[in-house]
Length: 228
Image 1 (tube, rainbow, N blue to C red):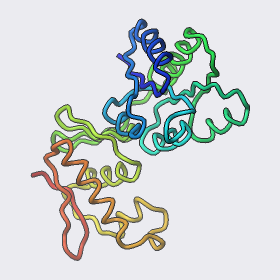
Image 2 (cartoon, rainbow, N blue to C red; image 1 turned 135 degrees about the vertical axis):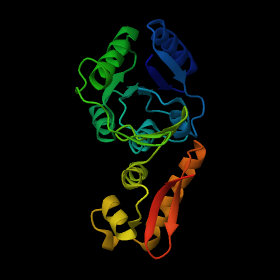
Image 3 (cartoon, one colour; image 1 turned 90 degrees about the vertical axis):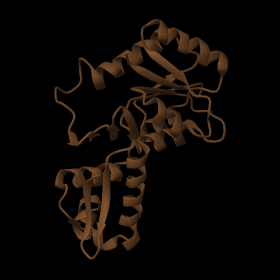
């Protein structure tokens, strides 16, 4: 079953729209925590996002940029803003489509289905997603999802690249220079502590899903991934 995350602060609209979407066999979660949209996204892990522009605290453009840092899933804006500049700005910030209010529920559903087919179904590229496995740990490289025994966590692009190179070379020790070259085009312009920060973040992600692996620091050499 496909899953849609609806980010709309008008409860009358969100309730009607969610009910209409679910009538057609698509699970729909209405976001209620507008201070932590990214966290709601990670917990629900939707296939598509419907998002209003006018939201409490931060607008939809802000959240679209944040979601694009961790996911490539389709994002469709639904907004009362009719200006061309708003639609252009939405696309420039990572949106895939833009629907103006008032809208037809059937049009929204048609747009949802079209984007789901394009990304996941009939019109998707006929290729399997790259996966890397280490014991019970699975990294879905394009989706930036790390999975262990049914527990999942989203990664940033840098965390995904770091996880991939560590898994591919495990249990070989990788030098700091090689890791920096993998993560950045020119490691000479990266602060020394930057790699440490990314390693620490990835370690926390491993802990969140109780992965039976550990990033070991080898003094004077670099890092390696080992099973524990």
